[in-house]
Amino acid sequence: MHDRDPQQAREAARPSPPTPAERLGRRIAAMRTDAGLSQEGVFLAAAIPRNTYQRIELGQADARYSHLLRIAAVLRCHVRDLLP
Image 1: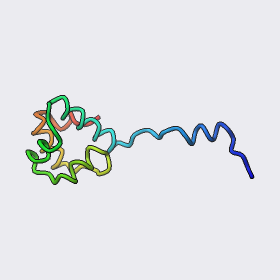
Image 2: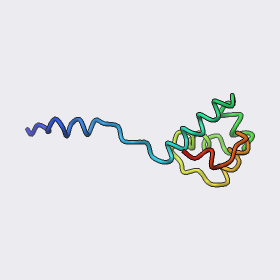
Image 3: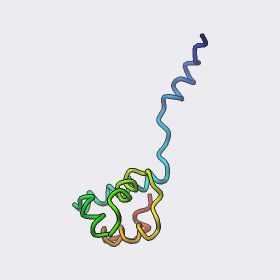
């Protein structure tokens, strides 16, 4: 058996940096929380399907610009404020 180099093992165990979609989702979630809104309140007011909104916040989906416009309107901010 080959033992892995300890440095390679440490590097493999390091979490990868968040993707742009994950950073966007975290930013939207933080702004929503700061505004005192629930996910349900945002996706209903923005007329976005629940699953789509949840996937955007989790960074599992690329958000459409039209969705970002609606989310920004609900959060009373500019689209650029959502971008990390």
